[in-house]
Length: 165
Image (cartoon, rainbow, N blue to C red):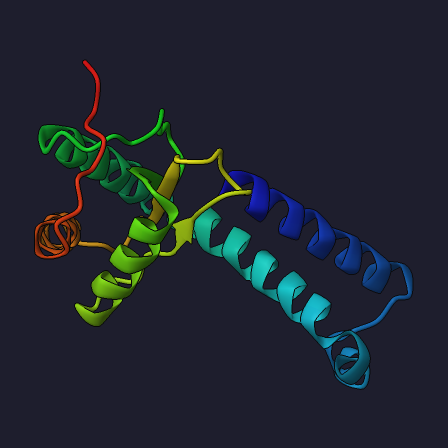
């Protein structure tokens, strides 16, 4: 997530710098939205995110708490989080690409949206599900997501690689 956010944020920052260079205000930007709308919208969203984070430092504290909770709960269940660190996107190793796709669909039907990462994005037989944790998740939602994963694994008769150590 950090790399994705950083690359998008840098693109947004370039748009803001360009807008400032041309001394445009919000009203003038409206006419540009048809040709450069996505970039300008991204710039606005990035700026608002920075403002929000500056105004409420507890957002990052809650996010870090939720990341730690997710990883801890996953490890208690023997799930392999593939060296997950402090990123809000936490992978769970699935192994087989088709199993990852099947689990992603099954979880979606249960209200848990989690995209798969498969070859060539990851090495062969190292497919994973990429769970995204946010500051607003409640502990019971995190636990439910992992419960739903375990239920789907059992229902689909999939054997997951288990965490070592």
